[in-house]
Image (cartoon, rainbow, N blue to C red; front, side):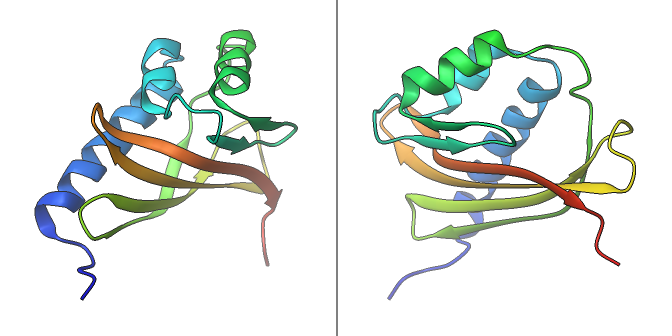
Length: 129
């Protein structure tokens, strides 16, 4: 039977997610790169880009502006499935996005090197009524 939200596993993923968030808002590209699985199968869909494979994701991070990355998270939901797979969902807001809300989802996998993102999606929509 699949165990959902094993407490110690959930704590590990929550820590990895928090590390990712700190790296994102401070533009710590080295940490962001480390937290994505180095695989041609890793995918990240962003607001204006579709990135397939670790190399494309790393190139995007290296070229991204470090300005305006601060944000506030809401409704973050992290769920673990067994001991090796998890999802993370969150809404985010930026002062520069009045009337809009960002959405982020990630699939995390336990690898020999630790928890890594294997799939991610980021989008921004008009604030629902």
